[in-house]
Image 1 (cartoon, rainbow, N blue to C red):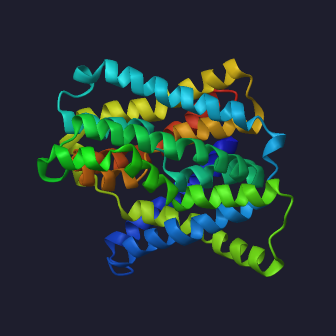
Image 2: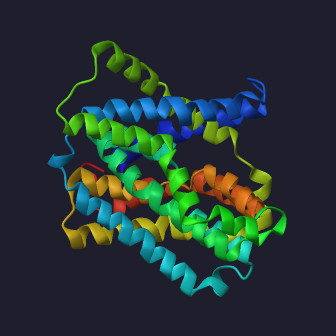
Length: 318
């Protein structure tokens, strides 16, 4: 447990620093949305392209790890749908609970994988992202189409945004997916990026994790947590405890161990993505509840992640 604590403590300290800077209004409030956009569209893709271009995915059980992630996420979705009335009777609120249970915060996930496993962890994390980003987006949009109201309560708008073609278009434009695919294509082709380009990507990627984590903290909304305790509790228990346990069991059944097992647990044990709030607003979810879930899970994960890694034989020396 000590190893994991030492690895994840700086991640959550950076997140809290982001919250403190936002409270002090330094830099100006308009800085944080721009910082998040810069990280998402430029810095993170640079990190992933650089790492994946030098990866050797054939050396790890990435296919079985990906299957374990799919089984865990789909299994949890099926459970929540079966218990929908108990989870939350309100349709829009249920969609926020569902998003809160399955969507990973890529900033925290990449930072944790890098801190615990180094470059191999980042390479495996890229494969986890290639699996999870399309899957959770399709599931979230489908749930919002079925149970959300669309903007201003317009179900026809939600249905339009949830069409298969619209989902495919959004996934095809996702910068994280594109950078992973491009990087692995370079690696599989046996090519190397030109020296100047590789060094530029390395410098850009080095700034992605700290800036992304600061932006996570800047988005905290503590006042929302008290108003939505039921939904926050269900989503947090599902995301921070049930999902990583399902992923661990699926990995064991499929014979996945070592760093691949660790990454599968990391990417199911991390808090929900801040982008869930945007999707909830766009498609008629309960965005107030979503903001509360994001804030609460990010704080709780500082405690639950080390505890999970202490209880589960995932990282050696943990």
